[in-house]
Length: 182
Image 1: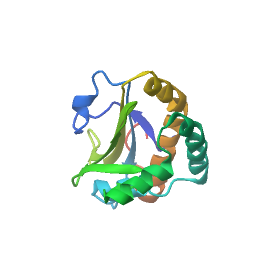
Image 2 (image 1 turned 60 degrees about the vertical axis):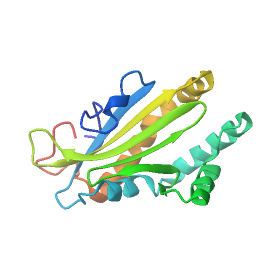
Image 3 (image 1 turned 135 degrees about the horizontal axis):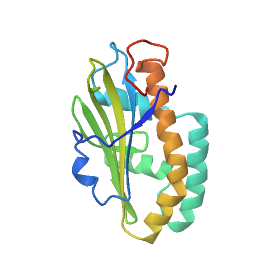
Image 4 (image 1 turned 90 degrees about the vertical axis):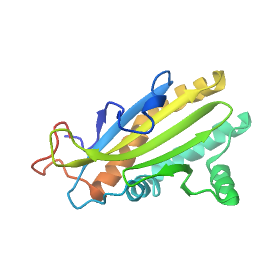
């Protein structure tokens, strides 16, 4: 039984108005333990700030592949965000943050990317879940090509990051009372 499950993009997310017409709108969730933090930014930092070694390796390959096309490398993104003093978690610019939802994103010539980490109640349960939602809108062929190129790895990366957060703050597959499908 997987700790991470695919869910419908949440209608209670601030990103909900952007789902229609998006080139990508997907969401994955993990059930949280009762003592897990009730703060979206804390969960977002646990999910995004310390990626596994293999993700950093994939990012290095991505950086080498996109640099000739003039796209920003991950190091350039981090440096730029530090330089302009914008709050970020790793390469992800913070757009807004509330107790229950942290929004990240980037707008570029080829695409707009948004990520939400949302804490909500599991329907029909007293448990809570963390939902990671990704929305991408492509502006041109390069954006569509880039999305097609990274899409197979996208699901693996999101699931892996959420699984790491679940190990830290989640309910294991053996725990009773876990939400269905978890």
